[in-house]
Amino acid sequence: MTLRFPDIPDHEGFAAPVLPSGEPASSASAFTKTFIGYQAACSCGWTDRRRFPPTPEGVKEAEGRWWSMHAPALLAAAPPSWLVIKSNLLSEQIVKLAVERPLAALTLLSHVESWQRTLFDQAVTQAREAGASWAEVGEAMGISKQAAHERFSARVNT
Image (cartoon, rainbow, N blue to C red; front, side):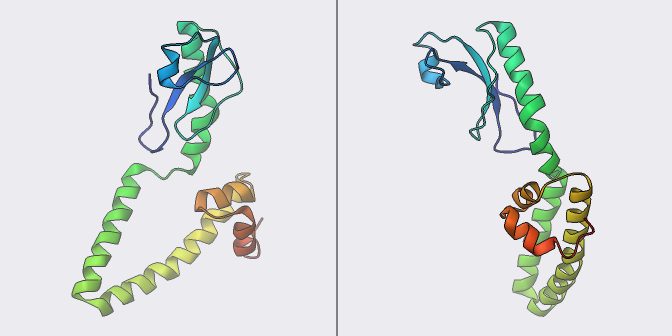
């Protein structure tokens, strides 16, 4: 079974059959080769080191590991899907506004930029106070831990 959660797109968990060599089997080879067990895996390339027996219970345990070991960190950094939809809609509306009334779009974007800086500082401060490392902050923003530290360390309270 494929495990999915709507707020973490591009991540599908599954119980990957493990070949005697210790490597996860591709879906095609799983039907043609003997396997020795299962391990939790994700479509992003993440795999758990723990192995489970080649039984239906082993499948359930491996799937449980995806939910307990991989999904929580993804969920912690994933914005709610309803908010992503609103953000995308706002972006589309600003693009239309820029065509119809470019000066109004610039005024609006300057407002967004001013509160966006404050919100970044608040979110980074909250993440650091909650125990997030600079690497986790950077990953959530799509930048390196060094870039996150350089950009925010002087402005956050931690």
